[in-house]
Length: 145
Image (cartoon, rainbow, N blue to C red; front, side, top):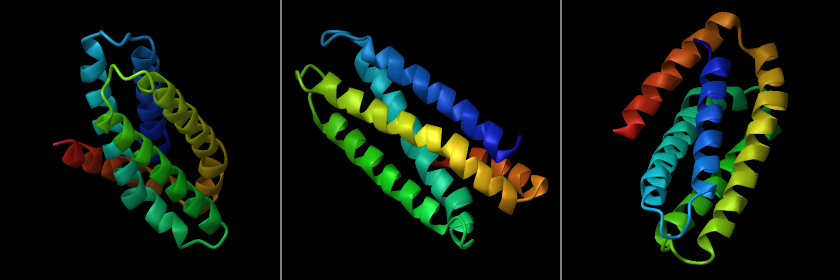
C-alpha cells in the first residue's frame, strides 16, 4: 500500500474519532477511552509521517516550505493534544479545545491530501511511495507500543 493510501486511511480513522469524541458528554465514560485512542493514533501518525515522508521530502527545494509548514501544523496539534490530555475531561473548556484541535487537523489533512500529495507525486516514484507506505505502517506500529 502506498503512502497516500496509508495516509487517507489514517485520516478517515482520525476524523471518525474526532467526531465520536465531539458527541460525548462530560459524564460519558467513553470520552477517556476515545481520547486515549486519538492521542496515541495522532501522535504515532505525525511522528511516523515526519520520519518516513516529510524528512526526505524536505530535501527537495520545491517542497521545502510546504514541509516546514507541515512541521509547524504538527507542533500545533501536539500542543493541543497535550493541553487536552492535561485538562480534566469534564472541564467546560475541554470540548471547545477539542473543536479547535478538530479544525486544525481537518485543515492539515486538506493540505496534505491536496498540495502535499501533489508535490510528492512529482518527486517520489511509485516504488518509493509504496516503500514509504510500508515504512509508515511499521513505524506507526512501533510508536503505538
